[in-house]
Length: 152
Figure 1 (tube, rainbow, N blue to C red):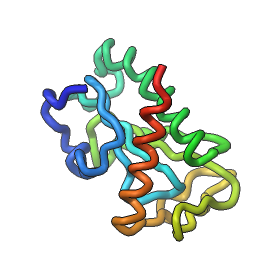
Figure 2: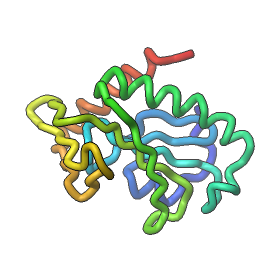
Figure 3: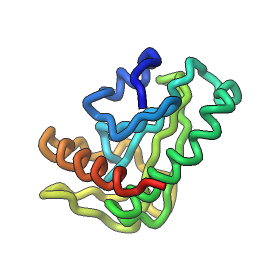
Protein backbone atom coordinates (compact mmCIF):
# COMPACT_ATOMS: atom_id res chain seq x y z
CA UNK A 1 0.00 0.00 0.00
CA UNK A 2 2.53 2.56 -1.19
CA UNK A 3 2.04 6.25 -1.83
CA UNK A 4 4.59 6.07 -4.69
CA UNK A 5 2.25 6.99 -7.56
CA UNK A 6 1.62 10.70 -8.04
CA UNK A 7 -1.70 11.85 -6.66
CA UNK A 8 -4.47 12.37 -9.23
CA UNK A 9 -6.38 15.65 -9.33
CA UNK A 10 -9.47 13.72 -8.22
CA UNK A 11 -7.67 12.37 -5.14
CA UNK A 12 -6.63 15.92 -4.28
CA UNK A 13 -10.13 17.32 -4.81
CA UNK A 14 -11.63 14.73 -2.45
CA UNK A 15 -9.08 15.57 0.29
CA UNK A 16 -6.66 12.65 0.08
CA UNK A 17 -5.01 11.71 2.40
CA UNK A 18 -7.20 13.25 5.13
CA UNK A 19 -10.36 11.50 3.87
CA UNK A 20 -8.62 8.23 2.93
CA UNK A 21 -10.25 4.99 3.98
CA UNK A 22 -7.74 2.82 2.12
CA UNK A 23 -5.22 2.79 -0.68
CA UNK A 24 -3.78 -0.02 -2.78
CA UNK A 25 -1.27 0.03 -5.62
CA UNK A 26 -3.98 1.02 -8.12
CA UNK A 27 -6.95 2.40 -6.15
CA UNK A 28 -7.70 4.97 -3.48
CA UNK A 29 -10.90 4.83 -1.42
CA UNK A 30 -11.99 8.13 0.12
CA UNK A 31 -14.91 9.24 2.25
CA UNK A 32 -17.10 11.53 0.17
CA UNK A 33 -17.37 14.96 1.86
CA UNK A 34 -21.03 15.30 0.83
CA UNK A 35 -22.95 12.20 1.88
CA UNK A 36 -26.06 11.47 -0.25
CA UNK A 37 -26.34 8.43 2.03
CA UNK A 38 -24.36 7.34 5.06
CA UNK A 39 -20.99 5.89 4.09
CA UNK A 40 -20.79 7.31 0.57
CA UNK A 41 -17.29 6.89 -0.85
CA UNK A 42 -15.19 7.72 -3.90
CA UNK A 43 -13.19 4.89 -5.53
CA UNK A 44 -10.40 6.46 -7.59
CA UNK A 45 -8.08 4.70 -10.01
CA UNK A 46 -4.47 5.71 -9.44
CA UNK A 47 -3.49 4.87 -13.04
CA UNK A 48 -2.98 8.10 -15.03
CA UNK A 49 -5.96 7.43 -17.32
CA UNK A 50 -9.19 9.21 -18.18
CA UNK A 51 -11.05 6.35 -19.86
CA UNK A 52 -12.21 3.19 -18.10
CA UNK A 53 -11.03 1.12 -21.07
CA UNK A 54 -7.47 2.39 -20.47
CA UNK A 55 -7.22 1.12 -16.88
CA UNK A 56 -4.32 -1.33 -16.59
CA UNK A 57 -4.96 -5.08 -16.33
CA UNK A 58 -3.37 -4.96 -12.88
CA UNK A 59 -5.83 -2.29 -11.72
CA UNK A 60 -8.79 -4.26 -13.10
CA UNK A 61 -7.60 -7.35 -11.23
CA UNK A 62 -7.04 -5.41 -8.01
CA UNK A 63 -10.43 -3.70 -8.29
CA UNK A 64 -12.23 -6.95 -7.49
CA UNK A 65 -10.73 -7.18 -4.00
CA UNK A 66 -11.15 -3.46 -3.33
CA UNK A 67 -14.85 -3.64 -4.26
CA UNK A 68 -15.29 -6.76 -2.11
CA UNK A 69 -13.84 -4.92 0.90
CA UNK A 70 -15.88 -1.78 0.22
CA UNK A 71 -19.07 -3.83 0.17
CA UNK A 72 -18.18 -5.84 3.28
CA UNK A 73 -17.24 -2.65 5.16
CA UNK A 74 -20.37 -0.74 4.16
CA UNK A 75 -22.60 -3.76 4.79
CA UNK A 76 -21.38 -3.83 8.39
CA UNK A 77 -21.32 -0.07 9.05
CA UNK A 78 -24.37 1.06 7.05
CA UNK A 79 -26.47 -2.11 6.57
CA UNK A 80 -27.29 -1.02 3.03
CA UNK A 81 -29.95 -2.75 0.93
CA UNK A 82 -28.41 -1.96 -2.48
CA UNK A 83 -25.22 -0.27 -3.61
CA UNK A 84 -24.68 2.05 -6.58
CA UNK A 85 -21.38 2.68 -8.35
CA UNK A 86 -21.69 5.87 -10.37
CA UNK A 87 -18.97 6.73 -12.89
CA UNK A 88 -19.53 10.47 -13.24
CA UNK A 89 -16.44 11.83 -14.95
CA UNK A 90 -17.74 15.16 -16.23
CA UNK A 91 -16.13 17.50 -13.69
CA UNK A 92 -13.35 15.19 -12.47
CA UNK A 93 -12.07 13.29 -15.54
CA UNK A 94 -9.81 10.78 -13.76
CA UNK A 95 -11.35 7.31 -13.68
CA UNK A 96 -13.39 7.10 -10.49
CA UNK A 97 -16.69 5.90 -9.07
CA UNK A 98 -18.98 7.45 -6.51
CA UNK A 99 -20.02 4.58 -4.25
CA UNK A 100 -23.47 5.18 -2.81
CA UNK A 101 -24.90 2.67 -0.31
CA UNK A 102 -28.69 2.64 -0.69
CA UNK A 103 -31.41 1.98 1.87
CA UNK A 104 -35.02 2.78 2.50
CA UNK A 105 -35.56 5.61 4.99
CA UNK A 106 -32.59 6.87 6.95
CA UNK A 107 -29.58 5.90 9.00
CA UNK A 108 -28.25 7.67 12.09
CA UNK A 109 -24.57 8.25 12.81
CA UNK A 110 -23.90 10.13 16.01
CA UNK A 111 -26.45 12.93 16.08
CA UNK A 112 -26.66 13.20 12.28
CA UNK A 113 -29.45 11.66 10.22
CA UNK A 114 -28.64 10.47 6.69
CA UNK A 115 -31.74 9.99 4.54
CA UNK A 116 -31.71 8.18 1.21
CA UNK A 117 -33.83 10.86 -0.49
CA UNK A 118 -33.78 9.05 -3.84
CA UNK A 119 -34.91 5.60 -2.65
CA UNK A 120 -36.00 3.51 -4.51
CA UNK A 121 -34.95 5.49 -7.60
CA UNK A 122 -31.83 7.31 -8.70
CA UNK A 123 -29.58 8.59 -5.88
CA UNK A 124 -30.40 12.20 -4.92
CA UNK A 125 -26.86 13.56 -4.94
CA UNK A 126 -28.09 17.12 -4.43
CA UNK A 127 -29.78 16.14 -1.14
CA UNK A 128 -26.44 15.18 0.41
CA UNK A 129 -25.58 15.85 4.05
CA UNK A 130 -22.29 17.66 4.72
CA UNK A 131 -21.35 16.30 8.15
CA UNK A 132 -19.30 18.43 10.52
CA UNK A 133 -15.61 17.61 10.95
CA UNK A 134 -16.09 15.57 14.13
CA UNK A 135 -18.81 13.41 12.55
CA UNK A 136 -16.74 12.87 9.39
CA UNK A 137 -13.67 11.90 11.44
CA UNK A 138 -15.68 9.48 13.59
CA UNK A 139 -17.30 7.90 10.53
CA UNK A 140 -13.95 7.56 8.79
CA UNK A 141 -12.44 5.97 11.91
CA UNK A 142 -15.27 3.43 12.08
CA UNK A 143 -14.98 2.65 8.37
CA UNK A 144 -11.19 2.20 8.67
CA UNK A 145 -11.53 -0.15 11.64
CA UNK A 146 -14.16 -2.19 9.83
CA UNK A 147 -12.09 -2.24 6.59
CA UNK A 148 -9.19 -3.78 8.53
CA UNK A 149 -11.47 -6.54 9.88
CA UNK A 150 -12.80 -7.29 6.37
CA UNK A 151 -9.57 -8.86 5.07
CA UNK A 152 -9.36 -12.00 2.93
